[in-house]
Amino acid sequence: MPNDMNQVAAPADAGPLSRPAKLRHCLASPDLAFLMEAHSGLSAKIVEEAGFQGVWASGLSISAMLGLRDNNEASWTQALDVFEFMADATTLPILVDGDTGYGNFNNVRRLVRKLGERSIAGVCLEDKLFPKTNSFLGERQPLADIAEFCGRIRAGKDSQTDDSFSIVARTEALISGHSMDEALRRAEAYHAAGADAILVHSKQPNATEITDFMQRWDRRCPIVIVPTMYYATPAATFRRAGISLVIWANHLVRASIAAMRDTASHIAETESLLEVEGRVTSVREIFRLTGNDELEEATRRYLPATRSIRAIVLAASRGTDLDAATADRPKCMIDVRGTPLLFRLLGTMDECGVNDIAVVRGYRKQAIPTTGITVIDNDAYADTGEAASLACALPRLEGETVLVYGDVLFRRYILDQLLASDADITVVVDSAHTAAANPRDLVSASIRNTGFYHDDEPALLTGIAADPATASGQWIGLIHLSAHGARLVRDELAAMGEEGVLDNADLPALLQRLIRHHPVAVHYITGHWLDVDNTADLAEARNFS
Ligand code: SPV
Ligand code: MG
Image 1 (cartoon, rainbow, N blue to C red):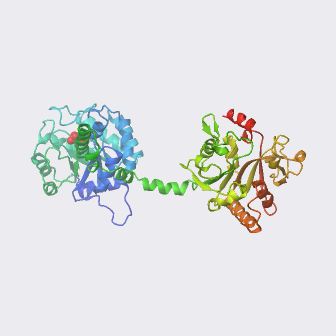
Image 2: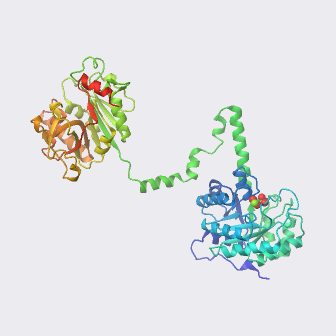
Image 3: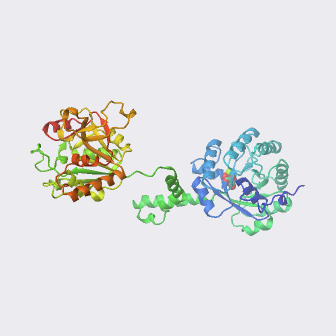
């Protein structure tokens, strides 16, 4: 009879072993190895961190974890999904409890192929009939015919795609009340059929059956045991007997049941988390176990850096034509159908990802709430203009920035499109607003809005329209600055300050200065926005949803 025990040794210099090779090494090495039960990705990971050589994917534990009996109530593909989660969560070799193989030789063939595809290192097949019953239930469970079971083993061996994949044949002869001779006869037949190891199962409270078997087996091939019932036997006994592999078969699922029950009843009784908090694993530890660090690292590697866009909202002035509505508040806080103008503007910006917002306040500044925004005060608002208000926000004028008047409303797509601009300075111009518009904001551009200007060279701001009849449109009070554009504006504001022209300048005056040295892109729109300068505008705003 062959003595396979000495035939497989781990190659000392062959680099990292595959998982099937690692399991095969556990079986074949003269050292006693241990597999620990797991029933989920998480428990498999815990087995790995505890230092075990491999994982036992227990049928009993996986069924129990699914709330099912160990009677093949879960389909084999449902079990396969769990094996896959386990294989993904650990690098350890996994020996799958394949029960009876879920049917005959044909089912075993497909099972073994699918296990191989999921990086499973081996499967244990027991010589019973489908659907199986757990070994510790009842007495004298019927065994499979030896020849038929040998066919299952051969079919499995012929189907493995990795040479090192192991088939462990498990005999239930002793548990089912058969003689030692029968157990040996079966073990011998299964070994001859190609099994890489034999699992001899016993439900005796001591290991006598196992040690007797070992004496008579005489190391003809690796022997695996499951000492659930003879749990008091020291490992030294197994070593002396020449056992290859011990499976601790169900102790993680049993430990978790005890811990879950204790925690649940404690919380139910005390109606509080106070006492359990220090006793249960921290949420942080769950993040560690499931590898959140790796995800953060991958996020940095694969996702573009999060874009951070600031906004400065100019809302210091009272406005001129809205006396009654602005008696106790600045224009931006005028209520439009239950929501102040400013809040609507902030909402639109937030939807577009612009949420680091500073509002420059002046007139009736206390009416502007400070939650969720940064407020900057221009206390000289009565004697200064918009450029001076913007200069108050100079420290915030850093990086990509949106500049906007506090009394402007626009549809979200306008800001979305503006944020896509790659120019350093881009102004939004409504080409449909010329005659009726506030002449102060009428502008000229290098190209009129043809509707096809995307195909043309970009439109550039050429100036504030001297003659409304030739204006290209109305600037709507919205500017986008790249980080470089923000620097250009800062420099221009500084120059205006030095020249003593800052205090009285408005933003069109600032733009007029900027275009002397830098291109300012025009993003054309037609409608879908409004500003509130007078009561007619206010009425329109109340219809702007
Ligand atoms: C299992 O863990 O599902 C086993 C071992 O098959 S035993 O429950 O002892 O049969
Ligand atoms: Mg089982």
